[in-house]
Image: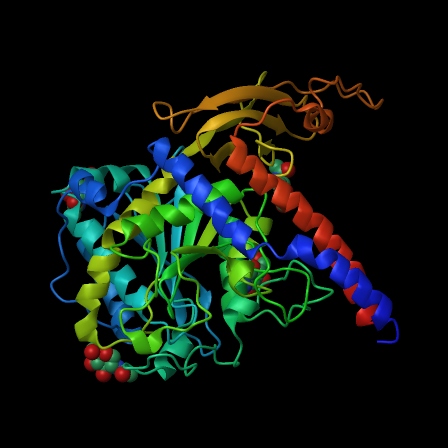
Length: 497
Ligand SMILES: *[C@@H]1O[C@H](CO)[C@@H](O)[C@H](O)[C@H]1NC(C)=O
Ligand SMILES: *[C@@H]1O[C@H](CO)[C@@H](O)[C@H](O)[C@H]1NC(C)=O
Ligand SMILES: *[C@@H]1O[C@H](CO)[C@@H](O)[C@H](O)[C@H]1NC(C)=O
Ligand SMILES: *[C@@H]1O[C@H](CO)[C@@H](O)[C@H](O)[C@H]1NC(C)=O
């Protein structure tokens, strides 16, 4: 602390560049109007008209662990051709972490059928996501023969549903709990949404990985998920990465990922398909549950709200192919059963529409041009900063994308990289692009890399952006943030040394 005066000076100097709260709302609003102009956002009314009526579960209810287990197996027995049940591991107290897959191709990955997941009840007392996911599975299966939109979704997507990531916490929690933390943690009293390997382990050392966390990590590495949502409770909004920022104890720090435009669209797509989540103003119908610190609009960058190190959505973004958002599905953490039909009606079209976002992706195979075999572990990137997708064992990739022009760069060990220009527009929203790579000769001399083909030089030479001005302002903000993070990290390391 001896260096504080100098540090304080540095701190005051860098402070203005990092107070981006107002700007983040402005970036979101500009992006949203751009997406609306492009016809990318569906309102609830439009979705109701497009999707049409769905079969409604006869009774919405809470399911304890044994009841949930038998219900999952019951659905599996009733719909053997559209479902598959597996466990990704066990909780501390030995409960299975059941996953129900709903798909025409339920049992295993099928070529060009993308993988999607919903994760509910990570905090054991946030019970609504768990119940709504049961209703969702029921509705998908029972509507399959009567609703063409649902049939198409189930035929073309592998939908994995982990109803409860924290079944031990759920058993401790109690119906009627507004806002407590009883049952929030797992049986080792750990908050699972702070337990993933953190992005800044020097500032936020990761604790011992819990069995539930490890199970989700294994699962997320084994299945090449494209898109995911984690359902929480406590307010009504969608929160998108990053959740963390390399400082201790300070919230309200805008911390966008390099894929910010994509996350804003995904987050707002959910909020806008909800009856009221997208509206400005207090988040809760029951005013007792409104908190002044809560945002007053339907979507927010995680760290801009409050900092969560070791959260699941950031880990998905950094360590897997998957883009994950966190949905605060409603204010009341564990409402009485009588409130569930209302909550289901608020969320059902949003839950369906969000799964369908999986299909707004450039996808295809990376193939060896001589053998015709798919190339595993090839990297696929659309931007020098944005997330890199890695092909699966068959060379298949799925990369969520907004409308725009991009240069798709594909690289793999022992192959000549390829860059291809793609144009994603409303009539070609999910382009299928196979990429053929030439194997390099096996001579030990390092290969000469041409400027055109080298992805690193391509990055430097990249001459056009796929986006319009609001988007580049988000990118500029992001570079500012990177610099800020760096300066702050130096500062913090001195203060805390
Ligand atoms: C679980 O729920 C079922 C069905 O409501 C009920 O019969 C059973 O007693 C409950 N089990 C526990 C442990 O609460
Ligand atoms: C499942 O598929 C098999 C083979 O196509 C078919 O014979 C059977 O009737 C189907 N079962 C159900 C419940 O749809
Ligand atoms: C995760 O995978 C590792 C390696 O395959 C295995 O040892 C471990 O038991 C798995 N953990 C869980 C919780 O499934
Ligand atoms: C792909 O990468 C994974 C993880 O790094 C590795 O375990 C696997 O062996 C690689 N597969 C191939 C075919 O290179």
